[in-house]
Length: 362
Ligand SMILES: Nc1ncnc2c1ncn2[C@@H]1O[C@H](COP(=O)(O)OP(=O)(O)O)[C@@H](O)[C@H]1O
Ligand SMILES: [Mg+2]
Image (cartoon, rainbow, N blue to C red; front, side):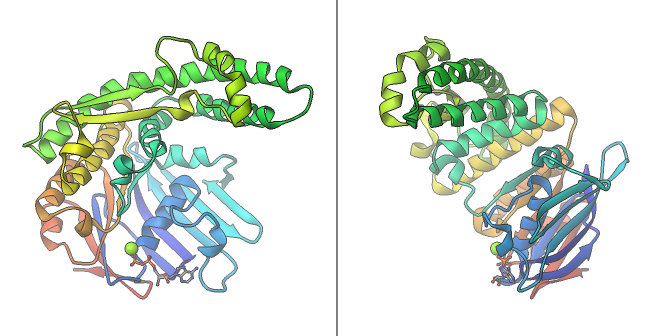
């Protein structure tokens, strides 16, 4: 699966960009503020229906224009084509696949699975547990058709339970009992999926990290499911109800899950250098991509922002070699040109971005 043609209009400083990306590696070079990250952001919007920079899409629309639009021709492995398009204007956000309106953003993600490595890739390690939960769930969203629905039901029930915990209405206790049943059912299922995928991820990440940073020992992962291992979720919710009511939120459950990463038995944050930690984060992302390729034979699109500031030349070469092996389409931004990387990658193309305009480099 890859983007064969891309058309972006009125997206930040990009007035109108239209091009045929390479099936393999696409490199965007240009000065600060030229529009490189905006290009990745436009692709991200197409795949996830939201921006990674702004919570309000109104601020993404160029200058005083009325709407933005991103349209891609997506070629599937089967050779079939799909036209995926998103638009935002004062009337809101709209997405279409082959001209048919898309109701849920998750439908976009199913068409165009993508992984985005920002220039803060180490947030997977340094940020709060939600970054690690997002990483863990990424593969499940794409690999397990039931997972998305279970996850959504769990979070809906959680929101309602938290609301009931804070209400003074006499019916609060009855409401909690109803939501607890849902939380326990969906929560246990979400957790089983997470436990199952983690062991597969551990194996694949460990191998990838050995290739990328070969001097470091085997990787192990510890999953903390968000409540005690020895007790069922339904029981925990009952036992902690008084505390939860006083706190005004649900303290235990899969929404508090966490993953810890170890290399040679030691916490990676304690023993790896800053640079190695970034390489580790790339291994985590590539582990997901590899699993998707292996289990579902489905490809995804890999977006990397500010590649040269993230990794040194040797590690960049290794990351690209792995992405090439996986055969996926990659979009990379950098301030410097990457001629050597380009030569080593079949089916690659470099573009220069200047003041929101794109020029193909030969
Ligand atoms: N809504 C907007 N309309 C017009 N220009 C914008 C808008 N939002 C951001 N910009 C400008 O777009 C430019 C591109 O930013 P960015 O994509 O981050 O550049 P780069 O990644 O190349 O450094 C910046 O100069 C920014 O000020
Ligand atoms: Mg940028």
